[in-house]
Length: 194
Image (cartoon, rainbow, N blue to C red; front, top):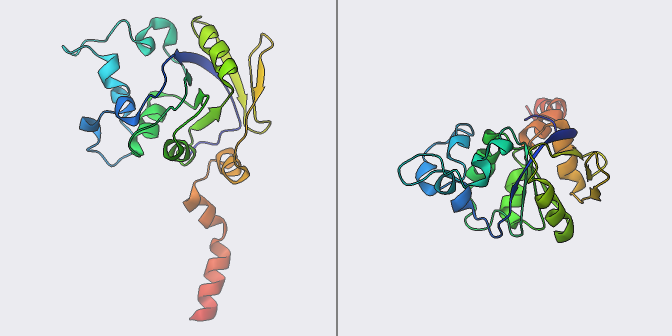
């Protein structure tokens, strides 16, 4: 996984609440077991019209949102089923962080396990960011080390994150990578037992 220390990126706003995992990645695209290739199906039913052409009214299809790496949405993001494909699709599309007032618990934890940073901010801060995201050039900086989100115009907001998950993200590790840190001890233990 890629470490997440500081990230500066373009912001896209999705001013909707209760975005569930079925909307993030529809069920018909869950036939793969790889973690890649899902970005093309992200928000598929919203991004495309019934004839398969891009929906010009969907927020992420607007030219000003091309290349966005930070998504801002409203409360209860990632509700619904517990599919891990949802964070895979968001990350594969290019997002490094999702900012919302609240997240579904399973989705939140799945993000952390897949190097996608879910950030909970107060509703008034999210409302401000959604308004700013209407501009084509709006960028935010996220410092995981400092646990702060800020822009170049004076906005700053801090966020909480579990210290264990924070360390894994900072190092770009998952639980398996963490196990490898203890490999010499495991080998020594195994040698004693054989």
